[in-house]
Length: 316
Image 1 (spheres, rainbow, N blue to C red):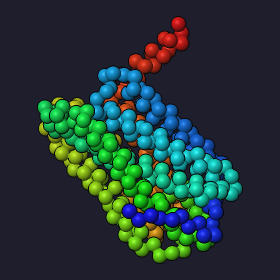
Image 2 (image 1 turned 90 degrees about the vertical axis):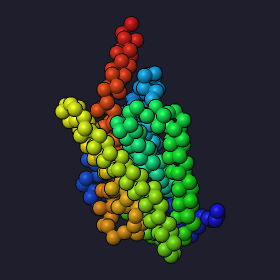
Image 3 (image 1 turned 135 degrees about the vertical axis):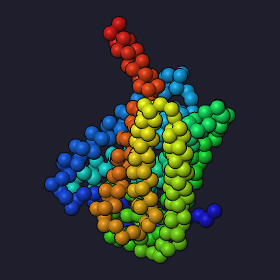
Image 4 (image 1 turned 180 degrees about the vertical axis):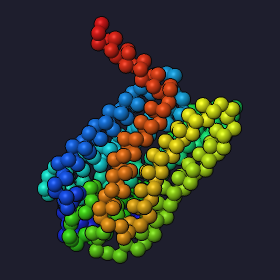
């Protein structure tokens, strides 16, 4: 594999502009984002703990959800603290090394999430469309392979892409017109020909984002056909509602991420790019696990059991 040498050129640190064009909104946005971040951390942590402690939830469906919550907590922890700093200071700087690290982990957790969501859709497809064969189609061994595969692909993509971006020379200016060190806004500051990288980035985005999304859509189409054959109208309505929630959430994530990364140097305005970034970096970590868990009776039962146990232990 080609070795990339970091080339800092004249840039030793970057300035994250955030929403500096709207200084009157900074304080309100800080409060809103802080609340979302705390709810995201608490909600996902509760899901991780509940699944760990309840033996009845040690099935692939819930273990996938637990892995998704780990990814969402990590994704938020990489982006949100720095975003809050940007909103609370007039001139938020980030070192060259810290920017590299942030980009690395954004790509790692984002790529891993893409494949995890695809694996979760396959799990639901196998459970609903092939219930009798489900124990063979999705046993612990298959689950471990899918999770390992998701993390390995996220890691391999990141390990190539991030060093490549930072091997380009940065001659100035050093102002990143974004909320974090994501690839597209950082790439705009390079003073070199990035044509080959953009071809790689396009190909990688198709593989990492669009392929899992298409597999996910195909899985849900099959699931919806299976739901239509259900004899109970109540069951059909509940299943449709659950599938619609899942699809809305993952479409938000895949759609905005693909629009951002399919064209690293796109013609979208900086403000549009920031809003798209917020949808997959802020909203999906909050919504995804909550939608998956709040619409699941077993998760709600396990949570209430843990809550009662906690309350009793504190009152005794």
